[in-house]
Image 1: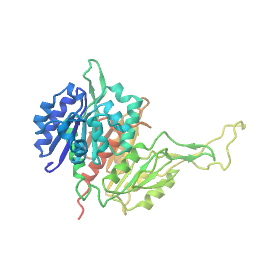
Image 2 (image 1 turned 120 degrees about the vertical axis):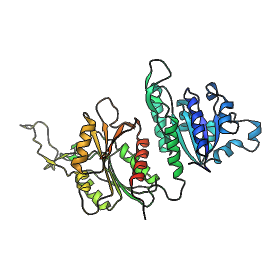
Image 3 (image 1 turned 180 degrees about the vertical axis):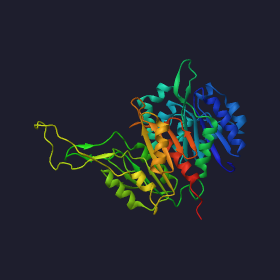
Image 4 (image 1 turned 45 degrees about the vertical axis):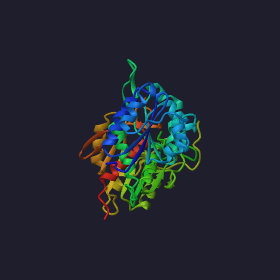
Length: 405
């Protein structure tokens, strides 16, 4: 329930604005106090009267409204809320937020607020996939803005289908409830110790060459950030990536699989271990101390040795085994079947499986589509930003861990 919680809802201009009316109704049913800002474009789809009737007070529309601005109303709106929700968050609104614009009531309030912000993007799939929108999304995520959706499906335009539909009101409501639960002094993972691995490993061939893979580390780093935001004491063991160390997280930098395993073992004990790193399965048994020169009489022969299996090693421990051990399965075919087999073979608790085939854009991209595979079944999540995948995972982790005494 949301009694005593104050929600400020910013309604952007898109056909999905009609869903905001249902969201207001659901919030009020749960006891929340709702104020709404309706942008000029939003008023082309729904009316201030309908919004105000459901919210129980007039909708705000104008930055220079004399009745509210005599006491700097936009600042009051920004501060007198526990959470700011933007639904629908159009491409234009996201661009304004990312750029720090303040040319109307909605953008001014969003710039002036010191509260958490949740956006529910909604736009044409081509707009969602445009490089400008991806940059803006990355900036907003870095600024701490929370994201729910968008979902995949048919658009308002005939014949248009893809990712861009605004999340359903029940999905937005669930995210609101999860975020407001964090207002309590005891955060969902407060007092917990979490280990996360991220990125690729590099196995040397000679001083200048190595065996590696295309992992960017974006998902692992996002999980570390989300766990820290939920109150956990997080150790991130990262392979070589081009990402900044997450704030509030202890980051250990490694190169090889053996170094990663050693760092994980040093970080134990922990309540949770999430193995998101793409660890090289093999290494060169005897790397050359000098650069292997091209033009030798015969092609060099690389004798490979198997790397330690970090996930299986930690999941199979009798001492200091985390209560929850979670692995990732990056597959190119039979994703679910391989994930089920990996869950059993590695003796871990959960597997997050995803399809990293050419054309998916997941390996190295900003979004992910995962299947949560457990002994109890399979839960398929929609394609969404990796930060949102991380927050969903942290929510599942918090719910699964036994209560602390």
